[in-house]
Each structure stands twice: as structure tokens, then as C-alpha cells.
Amino acid sequence: MRLLHTMLRVGNLEESLKFYCDVLGMRLLRQKDYPGGEFTLAFVGYGDESDHTVLELTYNWGKDHYNLGDAYGHIAIGVDDIYATCEAIRSRGGKVTREPGPMKHGSTVIAFVEDPDGYKVELIQLNSRDLSTKPPEAAAVS
Image (cartoon, rainbow, N blue to C red):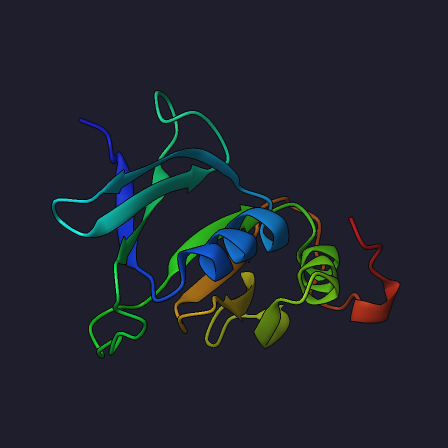
């Protein structure tokens, strides 16, 4: 078995595609309108669906807002340099809601950003370098 995708309902497909593709660097893998059901599906990700888990963005025609509820948490993306990644996201118009730093009660360096619908995206430092003391202004924008 393999996890294939996670589906998020979005209120504005173009804004969501801009965020996930232009701000987070994913690419649009496929998109299709379903007139009979009045919805559009767009699949985005960092690699082909054949060997990567992707996001399915579902736009229900005429629906521009969803209540996120309190059961949903976030999606997570591993990054090589969390400070540079946050600066790049900010420079592309993304909203960083938690600056990079060690997680509460732990040492893993994390940050959070928010998509246009308010969904949280956690960034997790992947490599072994200790960036927990690196000031954000010292990070190069990628």
C-alpha cells in the first residue's frame, strides 16, 4: 500500500494553485473539470503521482469558503534550509505564521505557513545541520 494523495477543498482554485505552485514550488500535475458534478480537481506535487504523494485541490463551483473545523491539523513538507525557505515564501507573497525555530518540547526546527484558505503547512528542517540559532536575515533566498 502507498498513500496517494490528500484532498483539500479550496474556495478559489487559481489562488490555491498560485500558492502551492508559485509560492511552495509544486507543479500542477493534472486538472479536470467535472460539469455534471460542478467541481474541478487539480493535482499538485513535487513529483509524478506514480511515485510521490500529492495534493488534490477540489474546487466546488460557486463555493468560496469552508469552515476548517478543529480536527484538521496540517500538511508537512521537509526542507533543506528552513530559514531560506521561509524568506523565499515571504518574498513570493506567502504568509509565514510561525517563524522557524525549535518545536515546543523538542529540538526539531519547524515553521508554519498558511495557504489562501487558512490551511496550515508545516515546514520541517530535514538535514542534520543545526539551524536553530541561525538568524533569518542570514539565510539566502532560494
